[in-house]
Length: 246
Image (cartoon, rainbow, N blue to C red; front, side, top):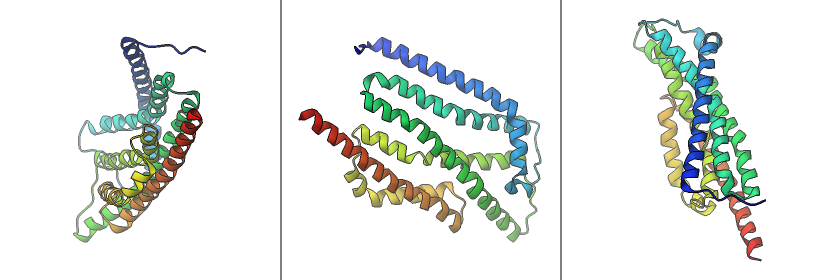
């Protein structure tokens, strides 16, 4: 099968089509998020983390603001794999068959890692954060009266960053395939990487030792997994290069 040569204009036109498709999916899932927002909010309200909090509103726009944030979360979750698939389709003509196949496998892996990160932050980190904040407020004799806006802002500020951080193995794998990083470089950068990951973990986790520990340990494990994945990918690339030269 002959490979088609694309001009710069054709590449830009193809990229435009892919971006339009992503935008269409985002808008559709955003509308679906608005439609299912009441059910999603009721589910979140039934969780143990929310049972101890009265969902008050302190402004007329609080309710619609929460609808928007809920719909955005739904749209991001469903648009992420579609966006990755469109990116894969765009780069596929420039890849070999084996590279295109291996790159396609990473799409569901990246999506699963994102969902794991969001679930981990919601079911483990978020309750710890609420408990820690509540204990601090109780220790100073404050009366807790929370608004729904504050509750969901705190939640989304935790869920999305942690979900994105869990994409680390896929990012390292992509950088390895592009030749930007190698397993040797990653091992040499281990101490610096640990330091950066610890800072990131402290920044996105609740301000207590237990929560810091719960987010930092998975981040370090993800980095070590990234080294293993990078090493296997790098060796495979070297073997493929040797086969071509021989």
